[in-house]
Image 1 (cartoon, rainbow, N blue to C red):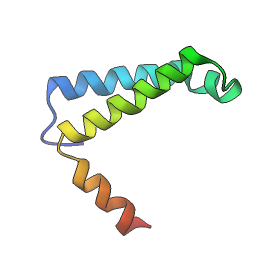
Image 2 (cartoon, one colour):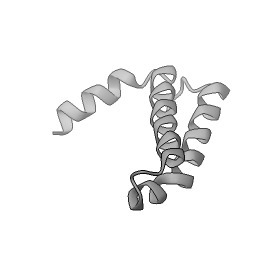
Image 3 (tube, helix red, strand yellow):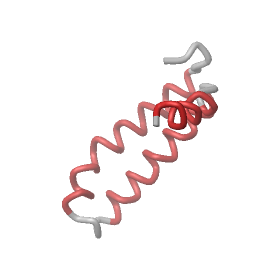
Image 4 (tube, rainbow, N blue to C red):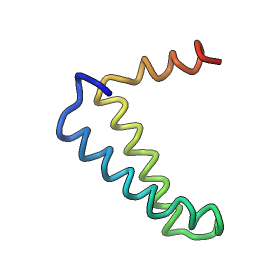
Length: 68
C-alpha cells in the first residue's frame, strides 16, 4: 500500500506477480529450469522497481532492521 503508486508501478507489480506465480513451483522442483529461473529473476527485479518507484525503499529497509 502506497499513496505514491502510479499506473507504471501497478503494471510492474502485476507482471512480477504473474511471472512468480507461473514459475515458483517449477523452479522449486527443478532448479535447472532456465525459463523458470528467468521468470523468478524478473519477478524479483520488478518487485524492486515497484518498491523504489512507490517510494517504499526506505520503509522496506527500516522494517527489516526494526522488526528483526
